[in-house]
Image (cartoon, rainbow over all chains, first blue to last red; front, side, top):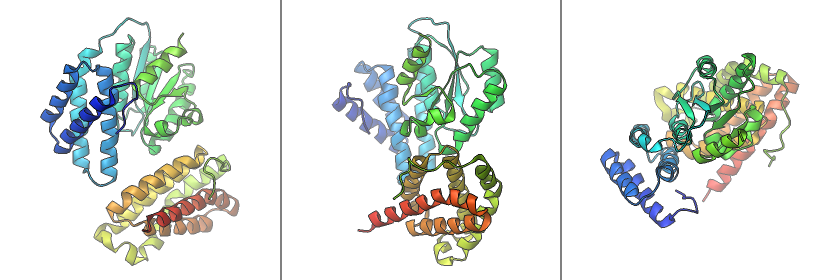
Length: 222
Length: 138
């Protein structure tokens, strides 16, 4: 797993290793101890998301791909991370108030929701009003919600190549509803590997992580 | 080796005809693949379903790569398959065989101009799979 260069790499490497070992054991309690150690050493919740949860999630995917993790282990690890994210949510109190609204969720048939939830928490912390819709949201209902709450920005999660057409369909449907002026951002593994995909799909931008998503979104509204 | 970033665009008509025939193409590739008993016997009673599922994903990925005019995306899927599928009893050679059958079936099913456009991508899949096999030889 990798860490960002501006962080104490050795410290994070130790935490990442311990966290992954906890996941291999399927032990939520062991994972909690690692998380507590991280919090005790004053590592920010943002860095825990980006440098512990996110790389561990990717690594778990790699372990499954190499047949070193079962589907059940993968689901268990995801459940532990999601539970911990829920427990950390109070730390994401808004630093300021902004009159901006984000509606975010996974496109239809996309089950991988952890990334979208991370992004949702970062936006909340940045002061946005956030509506996080979770996994596999039917396009029509997604757009209805965006209309109802007068969304300034829509966030779509599309991890797998197979859900990319749903992104294009979402953009077309948004146009058909006369809401094409609302900028759309997209994230997920496919977009991290190929940032230029966003343009092909007709979305405003893609981001590799939650921090970048907030930065790029705020740039839109300067 | 073709440059995945320099593939010709596929027309909307070709894409639509490929999609309209995709189920038929998958079905025929499965039939021809099942005749190669030595490449499916390890799946037992689930062989037909396993091969169908694999080809359904493969042709969906092919369609999306053509739609987005994005060979690199196809490459990433093949890299993933070469890493994962051997753990599911699908050898690199089996994948290569099915890609070659897929190319034949596309040629037999679609009009020549459509087949040529689609098989530009299928050729690349075959080339890439051959590369994987070469690099896997100790």
